[in-house]
Length: 274
Image (cartoon, rainbow, N blue to C red; front, side):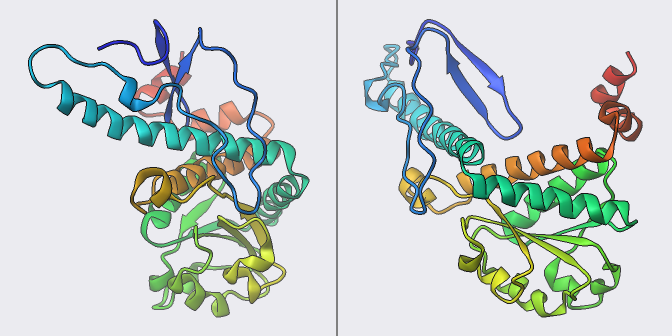
């Protein structure tokens, strides 16, 4: 197989995707921050149709299609993450939203309360992963399924808890049904695709709630031909990781020691003992 962009490509592991970097390709200026109707700001390094994978045994076409299908996902998710980073780097409103979300979780913890994460579908799966991350960083966190909450699990909520609602659309029916039961003593943070709180249906009933924007540069249907959660879950997970790290660094003087104490097992645990 010939190289795609240069003689060598080095995989760099991020928290959500593997981005193929290029040491010889000319630098591309950072993309402009996404607008309210964001558009893609980066282009693929080489058009897929220009790749030559012919190895003379008649399977080149199939290999090309497989590679193209996978590569487009990696490229779309890498672009989505870059746009998200640019948004938080350049947009004062996004920075304020993030700071407020960190303050909410920190305040809950310092008052003896906890973080509660809720969501359904793929957002629920992302939420469960984030619970594990927060816990490992010494931030007491639990997952609350919104349907089970209405059948008795509301009992795990306590005054001063922060509730992180994850919904890319900002209007998941299960979460909307839960909203009336989240009392004023609870702090609410909605992690959605919206840029403004007034556009998020979840927050319309709770104007005191906080927004954590996680938009994508273009719909997944446009980027990949199907609306399966891909770029949206990538940016959601990454922003959740960013929130966890920011909270942990504010709560703990030595985050590494806390993490090592909470994660003694596996290869990570072995590495922290060296």
